[in-house]
Every structure is written in C-alpha cells, then in structure tokens.
Image (cartoon, rainbow, N blue to C red; front, side, top):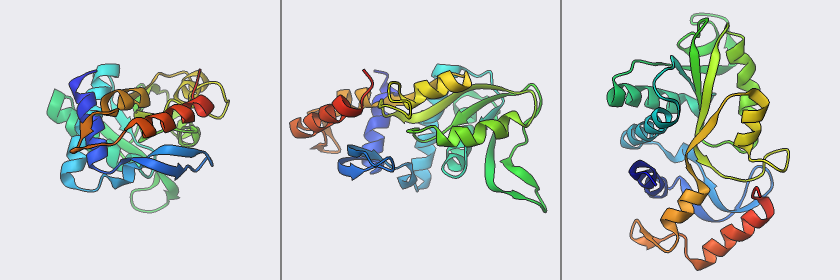
Length: 225
C-alpha cells in the first residue's frame, strides 16, 4: 500500500472522520463503521485532505483535465482544497466548480459556483463517499448541460465496498456502468482494515478482533461477492 494511503487512513481516524462502533446509516443499514467528511473543519485538516485527494487523482487520472467539480454541499470545500493542493504539488493550474442547490438570478447568476465549464473541457468529479450515487444522478445532467464536455472520472475518499442500489455491484461500479466514466477512491475499506487491524493508530487499537468480526459479518450481508 502506498505511503500516502496509510497516512490518509491514520488521518481519518485522527480527525474523527472515520469511526468504529454501532451506527445506523441513511440507508437503514446497521454498520460497524461510519465516515463523516463534515468533521474536517480546520485549516491544517483541509490542507492535508486536499493533498491526499490530489495525489490520488494524479495517480488515477494524471494531469490532463481542466476542472474539478464538487457537488454541493460537501464537494465545495473538497474541490477548493484539492485545486490548491494540485497546483502546489504538481504545478498544474486547474479550476474548481460546483453546483448551487438553487439557481441564482442576480449578480453571479446561474446554477454554477466557481469556474464556468466550457466546450471541450475535461472534468473530474470529487466527492466524500458514495453509497447510492444520488448526487451523481443530480449533477451529471448539470455538467453535461454546460456543453460538449468529457467527464474523466470520479474520485471519492473511501470506497465502502458494499452493495449499491442494484444489489450485486458496489455503488462506484454502478456509477461507472451507468454513466460510462471511471471511478476511484483514495482508499478502500479493505485497505483500512489491512492498516488498522490489531495495529496501533493514535496510540490505540481501533480494529480489534471483536470489531474485525463485526466488519466481516457486515460484509457477509452487504458486501459485494
């Protein structure tokens, strides 16, 4: 596993973004782990988060793209932080863009916040985590309505590696098949378990035998075979 992936897993635990316990997800599933990207709130956290995203985007998609699109609302700070980090790490000037939840009809009008998207441009979508693909369902037509553009791919921070709406593929695989562009994550839950199982992180063991059993049981029911 790449060093930045291991660091990112530790960073999620340190920032209290990735938690282990007993959680009820929006889908109604009972899960032994939960991720909340809204817990990244400080300048140093956002700086590091942007760097991890930038490295993963560079690894998976390279530098040949123009705009980083972050679906409102959580995607807005992600796209801004990562745009800055991409320039600092690779010297590549890209632009950030997001959608508004409501169309603005005065001042800076329209559905978009940040950069406009032009014909022939290449777009990468950035999100925190995808479980159902609902935000892509909303933002895909908005991006496509801006002109003849290409969506290079989607980058999320964590691939939960569980069944999407269809029941036999992960949400990321469903998105790839439905919309026809690649999907990737900084880390997968498999990598999280590999790094944390019976290993110290922040001076404690966060995935012990009992938690590992709970995670295994969860994936027996909701994991993709």
